[in-house]
Length: 258
Image (cartoon, rainbow, N blue to C red; front, side):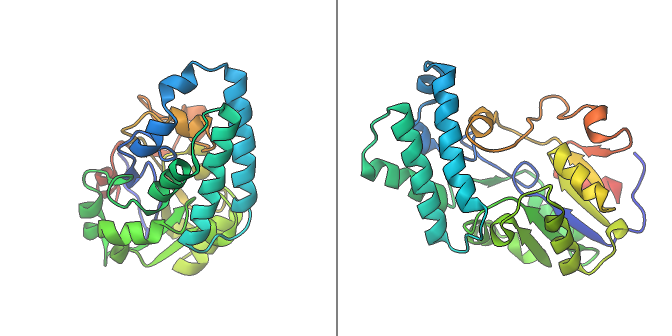
């Protein structure tokens, strides 16, 4: 694999790159799946599930279009999201049950996200040799989560969608990240599991690296409002990601590129 040269800064996506959900879904924790059981949703007419998803996603998208700057605001967003889903799907969840699901989504640091094997060691090996940054579509709860996981200390800067009110591949996300890192784009790398996001970064001159480390089946995430391309023996075709794009299958593979 051809090495990368003249790189001084590295940007990381989070979900699918450094983190994964042990429940198999970023939107539905193990607790949430008790109340929104996938097998029950699979038994419903697909058009009903799509309509419920669309309405809940529209409600969430309205909130995501503006900065959501606290975990309290995030909790309110997901409380409405799960309430709409329950109502539209006729699940009849009680208020305290929906509150428990939303609270678990926002505040459960131990059960909902895990580091991929080698993630912390890779960041530790890169720290001091390169500037390290985050570019992630995420929520305020990510900051205490990264602190809890012990990796926030490795990063020099972070661009979070909840602060900008934008999502990758919006150019504003990448411009904000470059501004914070203070490097020209050609001296930076971005690692992400979504080819569309990598295309957005490459359009600004950032070197893209595709990772296919996913260890879950994100059907629920895809069906209920996360624009995600599943890794399954190579997550994107050459046509989707460009013929010369560099690929790694785990985050430690980045060390072999540098």
